[in-house]
Amino acid sequence: MKEKFTILKSTAVPLAIENIDTDQIIPARFLKATTREGFGENLFRDWRFQSDNTPITEFVLNNKTFGGKILVAGKNFGCGSSREHAAWAIADYGFRVVVSSFFADIFKNNALNNGILPVVISDADLSSLLKKIETNPALEITVDLPTQIISAGGWSASFDINPYKKDCLMNGYDDIDYLISLNDVIRNFDKASSASA
Image: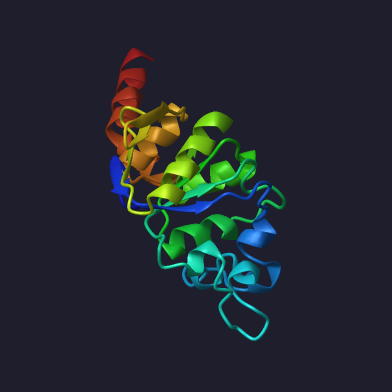
């Protein structure tokens, strides 16, 4: 079981770049491991570090002004290949939420399957939120999964989520945990079916 997700209050990291693909999120040369641990250190590796491993100071993840469990990114986040490692890297780095105005479908599903909530808001709302964070890095953002509302400093927006994936996140389930949670329902159905046969 994963950590349950209900309401998250956190500051955020603004990454106002559009069309961020999975190779930028986690470069292919780091895909050798088969477990989920350790990918966070190479999240956005080629944007965070020079080839000699010197940090690129102007990249937002190297800027100590910003931090938190929420990544607010530009439109079309997670495009490119279907590598699940991109979601692993984001989760391992410590992000629980990624906000954008559009996610590639495969990345969105990989994120949900790995306990990350992808929050889709309008282009206008995304622009407003990015400006708020850049103006006030200490801004606390509330992501309320039960009500499906994200809010900060008088601003708010609603977001959609698949009801099944919402249930899984709120209970810390993966697909197998969810099936196990239905064990009594399945057994009762089986008993009722056998009795009526």
